[in-house]
Figure (cartoon, one colour):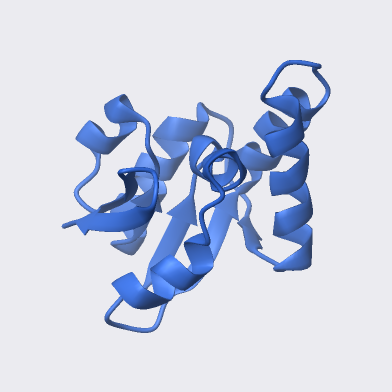
Length: 122
């Protein structure tokens, strides 16, 4: 099973201090692979360059991707959310996100509940 992490989910890991990988082990009832789309790297790099409150979590998310060797899937041109939805449908994958609009477009989604644990739908 493929689990795709989106940008806001990666940043929430650090904003909330959540051990997402331990939570995924608890939540998933079958073997899974964690991945991101290449556009997520671009979004995080852009956010990391600012000096707003999103810069530090974005930099930490980029470091996490490298340290955990999270697979980066190449995509075509397009909006990141559209690419995630398309890939999730093609691969029958889960998308880990807290984005309300994106969650509504997905059949299988993992999201953060009460700022401390993960829940899945689908």
